[in-house]
Length: 70
Ligand SMILES: [Zn+2]
Image (cartoon, rainbow, N blue to C red; front, side, top):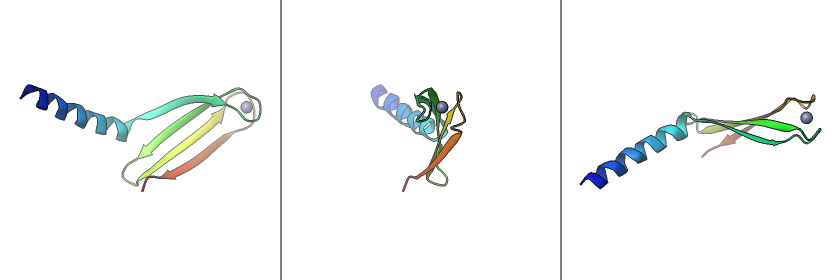
C-alpha cells in the first residue's frame, strides 16, 4: 500500500539526518552572560557525541564534552 511505502522513506531519512546533522544552539555564558554558541556533533561510527560551547564576547573560551552513546 502507498501509506506503507511513505512510512519507510520517512524512517530512512530520519536516521540519515541523525547521523549527519550538526545542531547549533544558543545558551548563556557562565562568565559574562553573553550568548554561547553550542555545537553538537554526533559520530555514529565511534558511538560518540561531541558538544562544544564557545563564547564570542569574553575569554571563557570553549569547552568540549564527549558523550558516549552506548
Ligand atoms: Zn562570555
